[in-house]
Length: 188
Image 1 (cartoon, helix red, strand yellow):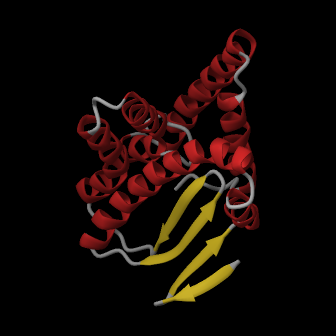
Image 2 (cartoon, one colour):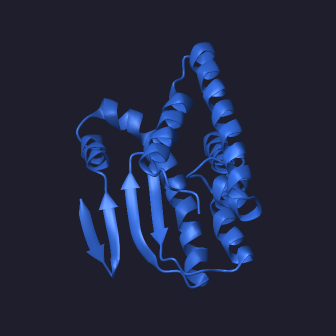
């Protein structure tokens, strides 16, 4: 679904709409999806912090895409100083850390937000860590760093799948690889 509001293109993935609708029709699905939607709110908060700082620094939102994997915001190509770009990229993980600190006594909220902050700091495209590293390193160096972290992510996800019967990290790895495949020319 595509909407245009205030010169901002808003895309909502059809699968996300189906999941949202199914949430209201089954108690079993509702129980399963409640955790997902809580995590989605943390992801949304993460992205809103990027939006806040980017707009404070003069960037304009061109597109917001809501998918089952999260939220992706595209801004115009206004060039900013390195420090401002760094602040924009680090704002998301810092927002998750702030939520974790605020809800320190609620294990679920604390752990999810720490996990989201750390996950987003991994230097793999399209995560914030990649964008942060691309400020400081050359294209060749960042590609090498990214390859090492992709390899580690794959090995850790296989270990967790075998040891804990949990495919979550492997699904995330596949998702990242699909994004990398679709956006081959992502390096600035």
